[in-house]
Figure 1: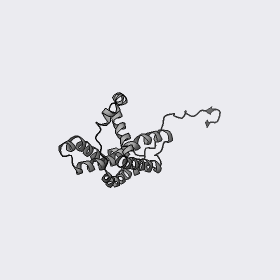
Figure 2: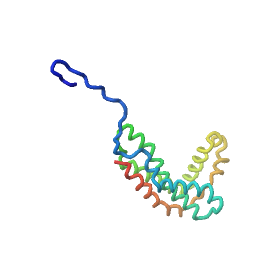
Figure 3: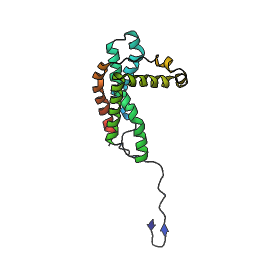
Figure 4: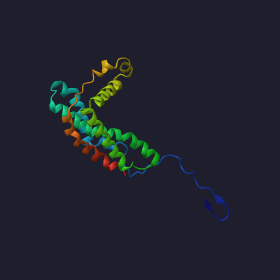
Length: 171
């Protein structure tokens, strides 16, 4: 309130709108980095064109590397948005580390453990056709092409790129 010589004048009411710090990067901006976009395009071209045409060791590892760059950033974007709206600041550093480690552990399990690989195949099948998967799970699970391959663990260092791309967007 402003105090004048003879009367009190109320101040303008504070805005209830969420105001984010304009110095902070835009939510999901890490996905627009040229390396992220390149990995996403390479992943799509590899999975939809080159695997069918060539289907060798290189196309398999290329998919793994690209997915390990893009997928952690995708998982990081939703919580990043929620954090920014609630806290009006960038999410903490540990949240990025958590997502990168989670993807690494899940990727390792999918490629080394038959039970986890079966859950992965069911999840992918369910994502493609939820009702059919519940009625005939074996039919769709067999349509999901995945091979247990311990050599896929050699691609885990690609998670470093996801971490480095997400690092500027945490506090």
